[in-house]
Amino acid sequence: MIDCHVHLWDPAWGYPWIKPGSEHHHSYDEGDLERSGAGLGLAGAILVEASRGDAGETRALRQLRLRRPGLVAGYVANLHVHGADGPDPFRALLHEWGASRPNGMRIGGTSWTDTPEAARALVPVLAEEGVVLQLNLHQGALRAAYDVTGRHPELKVVVDHLGNPPDPRTPEVGEWYRDVERAAGGAGVVVKISGLLTQHHGAPPQRIAHMVRHVVDTLGPDRCVIGSDWPICLPRGSRADSLAMSRFGLAHLTDDQRDRVLRTTAVRVYGLDS
Image (tube, rainbow, N blue to C red):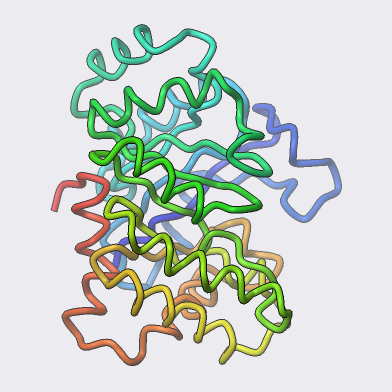
């Protein structure tokens, strides 16, 4: 299994969203990451930026990928922090780093139109260079992914956390189900089964599993990957607990289909060393 969504941070390095006294105001390093995966049968993890807010985080992720390839299978950097330089310098940076460039670049905000215009201007470069665009949007993530792949058919767009659906016990979840079906029409859209333990704490597990099953059955196992969202998940449970929650909705799959969700789709989508 490849855990496609983990973070590392030290609040001393400057993460504005981590407030003193908060549940996440702790340092998590590569040793913590390694220990958290003990006994889970992991073949590696995708290290995702944690909104540090500077290009130095990209370089730090790259160095860790180079230093610990057995632990870090790939990394996703922050697209925002490279927007100010413009498309040409960004393209040049990707060329300079070659095989050690990011496997993906993440853009985030309340909605697609809320994301920085300078960051959106780099999306054509990602499409040209074969780098994944990863979406962390609070609203309309699946619709945005469908629209972006319509403009850039060669682009792969990974949607974090099932597209951040509403509480499965509310009527609003119906729109999310429709968005999943629409996203299936965009061949480059991939959905990450992650963030469930944190975002849907208290919801009946069967409801959560039903959402996961809907995603996998609608998009297919070749367009789904899995992630723990460690250490964000820790106030609600361990990395193992988070992955177990994500896997709960995969019970109906064949062994081959399940392996594609847990491993081989990530290898193909992110361009990992198999």
